[in-house]
Amino acid sequence: SQAIALELRELMQQTDGGATRPASLVIGYDTRFGSGRFAAATAEVFVAHDIHVYLCRTPTPSQVVSHAIVELEADGGIVVTASHNPAQF
Image (tube, rainbow, N blue to C red; front, side):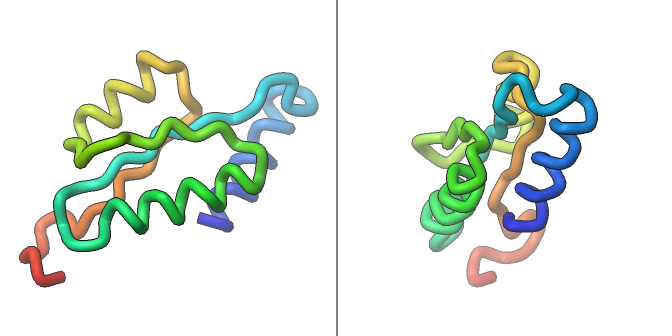
């Protein structure tokens, strides 16, 4: 999260001529153990870098996060998921 936050801030400064608008991200997570806590911790890192975060309140499919990025005109998104791995991972 730290590396992505630094990269996003750098990118915003390059494309916006000094970041005239704050960067924003959508953060979602799946139903696996701890995903919500990891998403919240991820959000804290971005907020510490003055990046606006739209944190999903409930487990959310990746496709919904993708749609939210477009609808909210966010600069990107992150989904905390174990993807194809079994639930114990």
